[in-house]
Structure formats: structure tokens, C-alpha cells
Length: 213
Image (cartoon, rainbow, N blue to C red; front, side):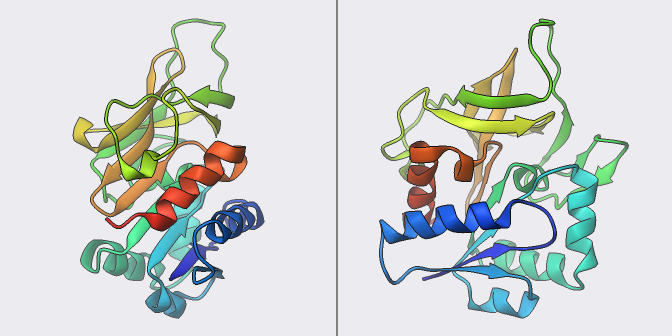
């Protein structure tokens, strides 16, 4: 199985690559992890990973700068149903649009908007940075061997407000509930960084590698 991590100028590619390599070694020697910077290589993949750090608009510009990348990703994910994982801003890009520094259109693969994290308690600091627990109400193979209220590592000031709650697999409480995992058919996204989440993060990546949408 070939898994590609998209390098479009955003995201800690090396950290993501190393974490996926480690998780793959726990699953099968037949899983090959590769950093992709050429859209033609998308044709060789069974699973696609889109990291993202920084501002939403900058990440969208990074995708748009590579001719044909968004169109090819859309074909592979929406038409060919390839398993997809978006990480942090890579998850937020799934939304219709973001209100970060104005209005920026997203991929619109999952209905919703990205807005700033609103808190009532002044002791809640923005950005939301550090370890926080996720909560989920249903069992899923993507959550195999992950405890309820397991801690993952977050770094973000904006949140994905998903229109349909059926597409929210897990939430995190930070002053109020924040979407931490989205899932729609073959499309998966995490607000947290599994590559920075140590043992729990490796388990989550392992689950993604074993997952058949």
C-alpha cells in the first residue's frame, strides 16, 4: 500500500513522515510512505495525507500554486474514494470557507465554516496550545485502542464548525466544545497533530493505515 504526504509548502512534513513511517512499521512492511510534491504521483497512492500549519489562506494559496493539485485531489478523494486524512489546518481546509483574516474559500468537501475560537472565561488562552483530551460517543476502527478522554496535542486559534453533527467523530472541550475529528465517508480530519501526540498519535495513524472506508 502506498501512502502519500502532500508537500505544498505548509506543515511539518518531516515530523509527519517520521510518524507515519513508525506507525507503518507496526502494521506491515508492505506499506510505503512517501512525500508527494508532484501531482502525477497522486495516481500511485491508496491513501492521501494533507498536513497544514499556519493561516488558512496561506495553506489554500499553497495548494493553488501547484497547477492542477486541487483538481487532482478532488478527483482522487471525491470520485475515486481514496482514503484521506487532513491534519490541523489540513482538516480546516475541508470547510466551505474560513473567516480567518477575512473570507477565504476552502475545498468545500464537508459543509461548515472555520471561525475563531470563542471563550467566555478569560483564563482560557488563545491559541489553544498543548495537550487536551478528546471525547467520543461511538466506537470506530479509527479509535481502536484509544481511550475515551485520551490526550492529543493541539495548536490552533480557529475551529471547524461542522454543519452536520453526523460528521463529527470526536470533540474536545476548551471553554466550549471544539471539533477534534471529522469523518465523512473516506474523508478524515483531525484538529490535533497526531505526529506530535506520542503513543496515542502513533496509534491513531496506525488505525488510519489499517482503515478501509
